Length: 52
Image 1 (spheres, rainbow, N blue to C red):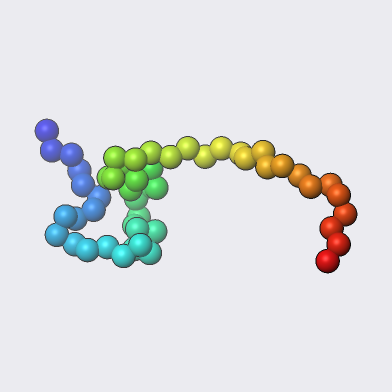
Image 2: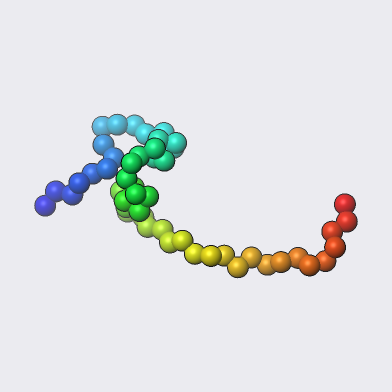
């Protein structure tokens, strides 16, 4: 069975062109056999006074 391709193999893409594609991000990264997950990061906090 043929899978629908978002990216055309005969075309060359620049990095910024990937962001202009009308397809959802998850479908574009799947073209490269990758996936992604959005999570909230818990970054450390610095409470001391900062002197410059």
